[in-house]
Length: 350
Image 1 (tube, rainbow, N blue to C red):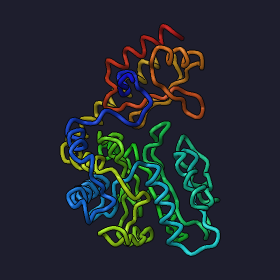
Image 2 (image 1 turned 90 degrees about the vertical axis):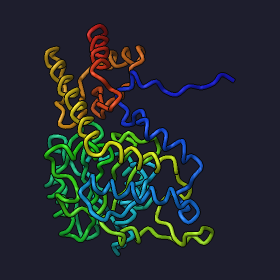
Image 3 (image 1 turned 120 degrees about the horizontal axis):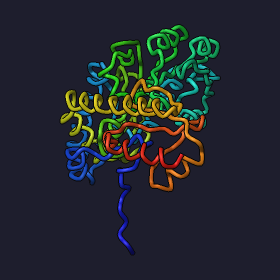
């Protein structure tokens, strides 16, 4: 059988994952056989997980953070809804999320039997009047997005948090992609800016860790207690994670790369990515190509479906927004040279 080779990232433009940093790759290889789901047996990787959670807390403005390294943003978002459901006693639980929320929240509603109420948007962010109309005494969680998947927008997190508290609901922020760029902006998005209870923040996206390495943060361990079950077959006595066996490679990778890059390396990465996004938007403007100007390093542009199809035939890995725009995410592997090559093909094919 011919030996398979992994995806070449040279023309990957829409993925929110990237090539792992060298220190992340090396740490992942060393811990391939470990299982942080059994911390009593795998003590070293359990210690690394505590270090990784503490570093995520530092990045997200939270001292003494509780949490764990998850399989990704989907698991963390499901767990946040689960915490909200388990914490509040109501026969008809619901949670409110903006229309820009990741599809993982729809999975959470289905898996957990919690009604998902979708609020409308205003200029790509949550419409507060729409959220207010949907919240009631049965609301267990309000969701805000800090770096939306399609356009990189940031919801008004402090105001959403205040609305959540009015009905004794938890406030969850999905910063799966945005969490490693927002610390270098003026947006109000983290635990120091608002009364946030839980957050999704993924090292395997802009954090440059190896997949899988998501992150769930909680303001205190009592919130994670809502997830706890007994584990009679393990050396540890209980477990709060959704999966049992987990990736020691992802945990070690996340701990290593955050120790290497926070904060200066991530700041430099953000500045490069944002500069590339602004440059691409300016180039699109000179070509009279409609686009959504970037707030964070994501650019969506209006290209004809046949042009997008032709670009894919040329090997460009691009995915559309729900409205059909081509979406470019300025991950660390997307260079200015890459963007020049992409624009040259756009000019030739449209």
